[in-house]
Length: 307
Image (cartoon, rainbow, N blue to C red; front, side, top):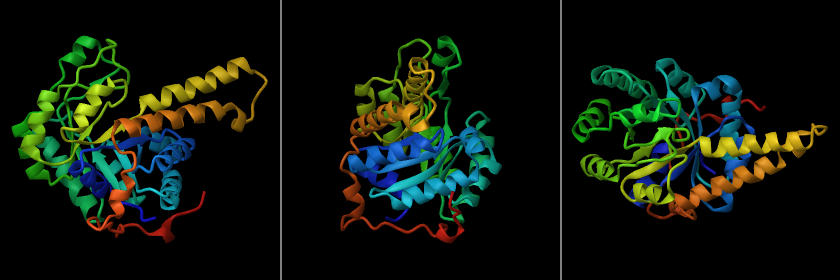
């Protein structure tokens, strides 16, 4: 299987009105669970790594992700989630990730443009796609009042941002938050999303995809969202299952026993998300006569180290 560019994954999804699930790999055990669910449903998938997850696992873990992707029967990409700065971007490009996100959304517009543009220059030289963010996506650690005061993505500013930076896809703020909702209630602004989709006509990304009503996610996918980020929804049940197992079996210590139920739960959740995003059985679209998968020029299997 060709290790597929995230841009190709997301472009095809956008044209065909489905979304590729981008699941955070908090530790390497998640990789098999995500790929097993994707292969069972014949769905494309993105394995993504947050900088703190990256720091925890190290660059060798990225080699493992890339090798597992190469062995998969479905199209897979490996992505840097929420790169903090140019150094995060450079590390991901060096480690041969397929795409990177530079998140300078907390900076003033012109500074966001400058940092993003530099990231694009670095990544595009190596054939690596770039995602950026405009607006302010909420955070689970903030109060409900503060989260409701977030800055939604402005369509005209977004058009200007895309033109100046040459990014490949854009993460937009339409009401989601990272992690569980503080108030227990979410509000995805489909009206804002429709305006953004009409103005930009490019793949859009939904961050904070966990803990949202299914009907809102479906509607978002039909209106330009081509990549949905999922982290909390696959982490909390996984670790809670391990906690419950250890509490009920305090003398047990073998990892293949302790993680059995956790793995099963995580695989089911990933499968449910794939169905929700309408990406089930969409892997075949990447092998059709109308789609030509491009081997990644920056990818060198010889540079990968076995773990």
